[in-house]
View 1 (cartoon, rainbow, N blue to C red):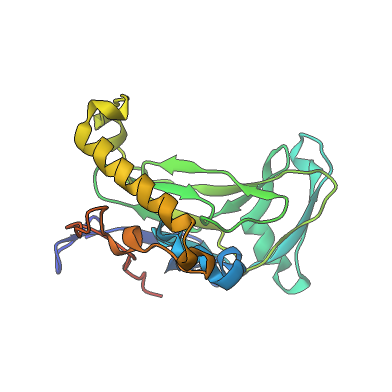
View 2: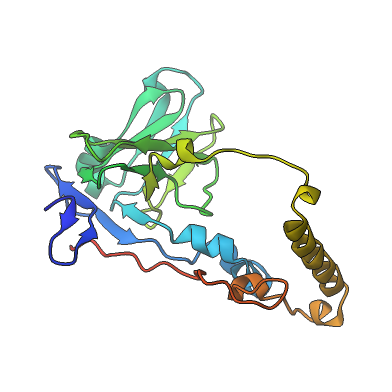
Length: 252
């Protein structure tokens, strides 16, 4: 029952709880909202549909432990000083530690994930959620067969500068990934003039975009909604267009 839900015949992603202490660990559908997008004038970044779509194309994994950390620049794992609040120090230190050295902090996730055949998990930082001096490292895991857990790792970039990790920040963002698709795709590159229909539509879009950027509507804060609405340069609606994802929720 871990691979396919017999009740709905939908492919299933399962998170097996394997940690001795699960309190505070949650998995939730990722939100389309981001602070950096909220902070743009008039929240204009939300007009960029690709940003919002990337934000919500997976699940957040959160833990209840916040901390501060400083890296002294040494390559050894002892080069990082982690400081947890007193009330969470014992539990947090078992899950968050310096393992690799080189300013890398490792989160031990208390879940064993299993996905359908051919589907892995791209494990990364939350899209468009930057942290000061703290960069997420990415991994691609074959969760369709592996019986082991995986970790999430973050790199402190600048020695001597404190980083702060708040419990509201996702530990990682997990996204299903078709493991076979990249190798199935045949790569092509050619001048656009080799495809007259594509060239025609591109030139129409470029002309429309140029006219809009110099229009009074744009100067008053208006915006072109063709892509957001799934409409091409000739006013035709595409048959397949998304403006959001509705991901399944993991039960508490």
